[in-house]
Every structure is written in C-alpha cells, then in structure tokens.
Length: 256
Image (cartoon, rainbow, N blue to C red; front, side, top):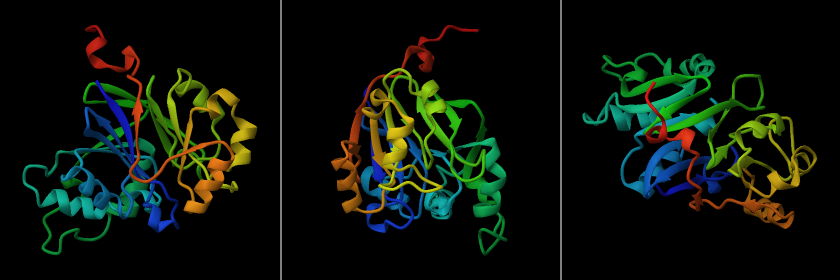
C-alpha cells in the first residue's frame, strides 16, 4: 500500500489565503480519509479529487474546522448515491457540541423532511476506529476545554495533532515508532496553540525532527518557522508516509 498525507489547507483561522487547516490521508493516490472540513475545505477537496469525500474525521468543533459541514450536507443530500453513506468519525464527547454548533438549525431544508445527520453516517468513537481495513487511534489534545479536541494517529505512519498546546505525554504513546507528526504551531505560542519555544521546551530532539508544522498565520511566519529549523507544510503538499504497523492493518490480524 502507498500512503500519503495531503495538506489541503495549512492556515489558522485568520490566514484565509492559506486555506483552513485540513488534510487527506491518501492510499494509492486516492482519498482515504479527510481530516476536518473548514469553510473552504470542500472546495479544495473537489479541486483535488473531483468528487466529494467518502469519509471524514473531525478533530474539534471550532468553525475553521467544521464550517464547511453545511455545504457538505447539501453536496451529499442531493446526491442519491452518496446520501447517508459519508462516514463522519468524531469522538463521542464532541457529538453534543457538533449538534449544537452545526446540526440544530431549524429545518435544514426549507421544505422540511430532512435532519442534518441524514446526509451522513455519523460514527461516534472513543479510543479509535477501523476504516477501510486500518485502525486509527484517537487521543485527546490540549485546546481550550478538556475533551473538546482530539488527534488522530495511524501507528507506524502518521500523527495529526489538530489544534493543540504541546502534548508530550500523548505523543510518547502514539508517535513512538518513527511516525511523521503533523503538529499545530505558530511562531509565538498562546493559550490555544503551540509556539516554537513550546516545542523546544516540551519535545526531545528526535521527536522535533519528525514534526511537520501547519496551522500558522502567514507565509512570512512559515519562513520564520523554517528558519528555526523545522519542516513546514505548504498548501497542497503531499508527503509520503511509511506503511502502518501490522497491528493497525486488518488483513494481518487473526480471527477472534
């Protein structure tokens, strides 16, 4: 199997020109799993793949990460072949927040007869989930209130932190085998996001060398991060991933 991580957007909530932070895990050059769906994410996805996503993982419910869900609803609802089949994976703790933020508007269709989640197959998760024969770990990150933001990991291949402050205790578990780690970072940290000084204080050198930074504020900031010695993702960039560990691949597991 050939896996890659494609950055559809790399900017923070104010960096509109960089695209809202969003990625796609590709398998054999086809989209396997979309991560987050901000206001412009569906446009970027359609331009890249010429069809709507079949599966989506949501890290948290800030609008720069879920603001495209309403458009995705319409795209899916009016496609008879896709309606009700687009898998949306979200941690169970996020479901009430998602419901109140994006799904509870009275009459999602003016003519009535539809509920927001009718367009999707909503799958609440906790420790992780199987998708297309691969096991993805889900873990809490540090972004505002506890248990409101979550990262995603595919053992042996990649980790996506989502928006977060440093999480050394989590990464010691889910990024212990040489995984590429796509990490939230701005030049100067704040109560919501990691900064370069935070990374250097909290993470060992060996881990920092595997980081790919995203969710920054401008192209100038990206260059400054590179000047600090970090790899920084560009919008549209794809990075080849190592194959996942055997225990994360269904075909390698015995029956039970």
